[in-house]
Length: 114
Length: 116
Image 1: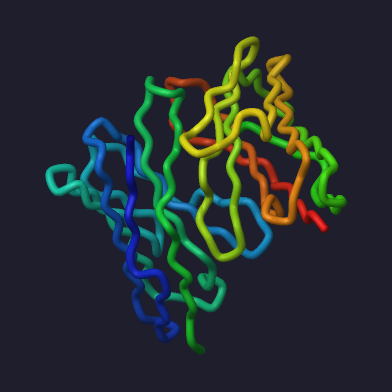
Image 2: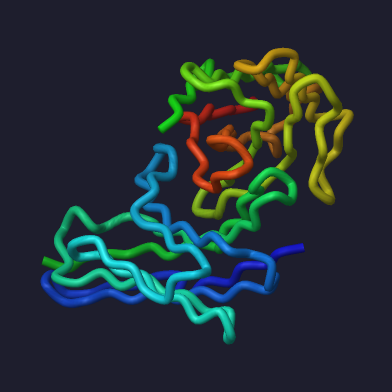
């Protein structure tokens, strides 16, 4: 089955700087890669996603890149703000098999220093 | 997107009792729902896939007789933690997708289970 690895586990950056979180996946059939932000005690919130037919996607300060050959994908947050502090999870899923079962990475706790 | 609710949001029970958690799709007919468990400071781990009108599919290492799943209608899936023990204390979250042609999952707000 799919296995998703995520690094780093914790990340602290100065407010205004950029943050990068990296993930790898194992199943070449996976073709949808969402990123979630989770605050303590809350449900995961989708912040951006990318499909395997796209190499990069951007939404304001957030961007995601995907390298299908290497099975790598990364989240980039620019101009970080205090409200970006949270736990971020990458995930991978393959459609049409197991009804889009999502496999999560281990998470990155991002802290923004004022 | 789909709206998913869970009930209860928090439950505290004594060791040995059973607890039922409901997951409802409020505006979407969900033939498939997923149940996740999240321990403190850990990731979401998929427990099982709930299929309307048929048996649930459990992930490796998840005891089907301990975590009973019933998906009797297109809007409701229930997870019953039987004979709960302190190690079952966790955050349980359900999700459903907008049809298998779409990948995006919509999550319920979660249920915090504490077993004393």
